[in-house]
Length: 232
Image (tube, rainbow, N blue to C red; front, side, top):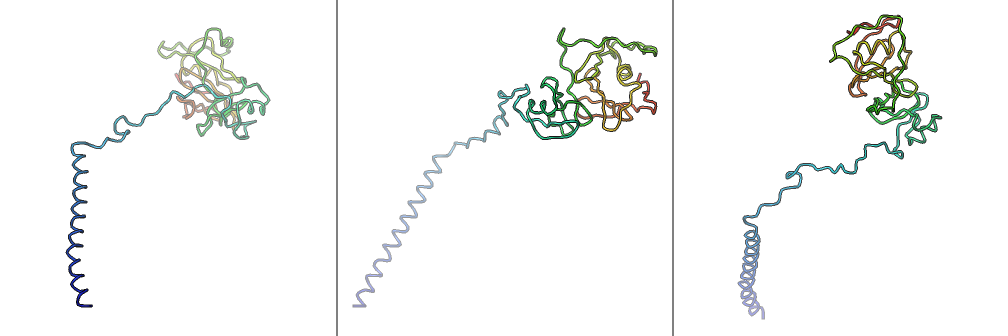
């Protein structure tokens, strides 16, 4: 019996080899057909390479959302992130009397009184009849010399939670003198003004200026008797 089984095993070997070759050729043929079908077609480029990053800004609302949390300050102390109404209630004032601006980190903040931590927002474009000009101030010192028309601009004073426009346009130096001459600030205190598109700030020992209402740089050093140099 054993000699008869040996020939049967040998007869099966060619069949197995042939079957394997057929399967291999069939796989190669299928792969070649798939590759040929894609010839001449380039893969679609990613969306970012066609038009760059696209951001839909249609939902952006520039108005202050009453429900949005603000960094709330009470008496100069940070009390947490509250809504405009909640922060006004903590400060004991109406929402329209609450000062809203940028703190040192650039975050939107609110407080009853402005200081060096919180910068009041600059005045909005004046609407006729919406802002009463500040009454003329009778000064004992001579008025500054007239400056070229190109150097004249509106001067604003920030006091009691609101901006008041001075009656006449003037130079930057005249605005600084009108707002801050003879006034000294204690530690942590600040007095604000505005000339043209620049925010002015009086802090202990100097006057600072900012073009973005956030980053301030020194403009003038204040003397010990609270006087300021002539800026021209």
